[in-house]
Length: 107
Length: 119
Image (cartoon, rainbow over all chains, first blue to last red; front, side):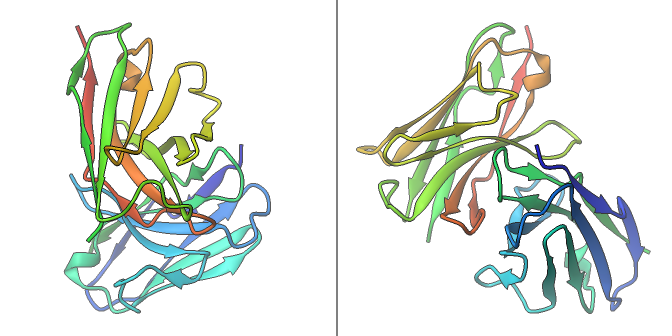
């Protein structure tokens, strides 16, 4: 199985900040990488697919980059509704696997 | 507006079969553009891929669960289903059904269904 490792596991930031979350794959996955946002008690929401493409209706404050094994999710101008847990997922090879999550908290 | 809705028992006894159905509205499950899948999340933990199905009936299952999982599709009712046999306490989780555009990851999630395995 491809292991997905996110860093950091948790992150404190202030409203208005820009933050970056990193996801590393244990082997190359080209750009078959997605990002999800999950708020407590809710289903995940799809943010990004193909490493850099925004899902429909996702604001441009979210951006993704990377290819191969190293990927990043950047969120600019943090707002209260952005504080959540973020997951990366590879869909290059079965079984599709997720990172352990990064919890973004208000400082 | 696409919607996916999980349904099924919220409590399953150990050794019994956990069964859930996902009803799709706003899209046809027989579309050649999508796979349909199941993902679970134990309380307070991360996400685990269970498996997926294409409208033709072709399936992929996570090897860690393969011996106990069956995913099937019911095109007349626009539904797909999950069966997980020999359930134990570690199978307690929120189960999500999802839509998977080919080559594009997951775009839509159901709201999730909590299933508790307990006597």
